[in-house]
Amino acid sequence: MSGRGPDSGTDHNRNSIGSSGSPGGGSGAGGGSDGDDCIIVQTAPLSSPVPAVVSGLKVGDVLEVDLQNTPSGNRLVVSTAGGQAAGSLTHPGHLKIIQCIGNGHIYKATVVQKTGALIALRIEPK
Image (cartoon, rainbow, N blue to C red; front, side):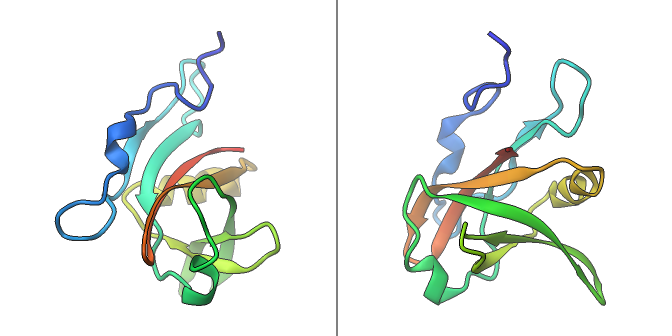
């Protein structure tokens, strides 16, 4: 066992949508036993969801996590395989992911819960 599988070091109970009606933000831990602090697995809400794209998402869909350079700085954009932006990531921990992508790491976001336009994603290395 490598310890890097999709279930290593995660708590599946963190994927619930809380009483406030929004997905829990930024749970999960980074860092692997091999010292690479870019082996990050987190559960985070999709921010600024695009209704036309989010309406077609379902639990289990795998999305791309990309770094977008903007005049106000870098941001993480979550897109479908077809390139449609679904929203962004702004949870606690997103700055580390930005740094890791800048260093060549690639991440994916899997839809783990969907309640209307509220989407909870599992962020992990691709």
